Length: 325
Image (cartoon, rainbow, N blue to C red; front, side, top):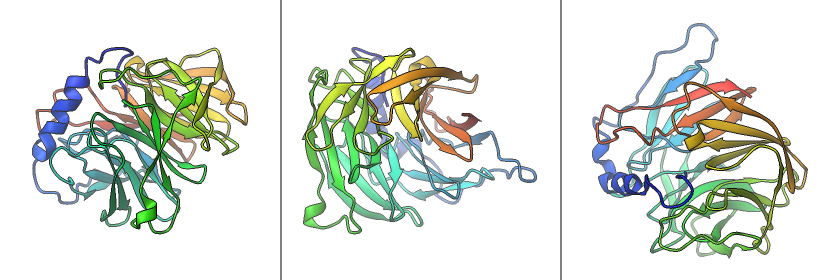
């Protein structure tokens, strides 16, 4: 999740959203089903519940998608084949957020907690919170996550650091606490104080030997060595990553979701992630401050966070839209 480069007009909105806690999500947390698509046609637009502002997305191989709410941290599960979904995990408490999230190999959702500095491990089947880890205190924004390079890696948009969670079957023991990895090398530092966005979306290189992190302050993409934190700028042959939010690597194709540009720039990556050649830009009239995306069944599923909407109105809702890759 990002704002424009420099001082953020929407920073105040994020603070207000965190302060709302669960107040914006009204009504019982009962299953929320949407109309099933006719026949076998997959819906191109999937509504998320009213009062639920989505940001991240994770999709299982069978086509079950998960997204979390910026307003109260609750989690929503939806069948991409039918559009039917329900909230599986209620708000963890006042001030909670769910930003980026990913599935691991053990059927767990790894959830970045935004401004509260927490990482949650959630059972993807029944929504139980299996573990909660404090990654950061003070001014921090735990933003996005990727599983690869030996574990799960989380970005902090206000601090020049990644948090590493080991990829183990048990994530509740003393040895499973997140470990910070400072970013160095060519990484462009983020001004302190939480007014500028640095690290945001994160992915792994096609060879799974390094990480790719977009730096919104620098409007650049960096390849990060997961052993040392040393960053080198990925050379772009055309295209842009400004306002880059979610990253998706599918094979050697990189999708950069550019929220305030209402667009997704598509690149072909070198295997080691050191170079990226621009291929095309995807735009769609349904994009409404898109933040993240996932590839499934030859389609790109894009989350609309709708930052400019009035989320103090409990009737406000958003969508996940499907478009061609």
